[in-house]
Image (tube, rainbow, N blue to C red):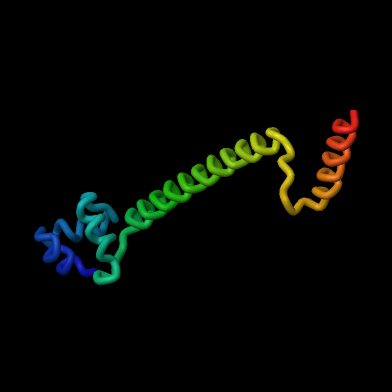
Length: 112
C-alpha cells in the first residue's frame, strides 16, 4: 500500500504514513484496521501477523487444555463406574449360567 493511500484512509499526513511504513510500526488502531481489511488493502504488517499468530496459539492452547481436562474427567468417571462393580447385562454370554445357578440354589433352599 502506498503512503498516500494509507494517509488518505486514516486521515493523516503522508509524512506520518511514511514514518509508519519505514518503522514498520503504527498505532494499534491502525494495525487492527489494516489487519481486518488486509485482503482489500493487499498489505499486512509483520506486527499484525505476530498478533494473529499469538492469538491463534493462545486459542489452540486453551482448546488443548480443555480437551485434556475433559479427558481426565472422563477417565475418573470410567474408573468410578468400573469400581462400582460388574453389572452384567441381559444379553451377557454367561447369563444362562448365572440364572441356572440361581434356580438351583432356590430349589435347594425350597427342599430344606
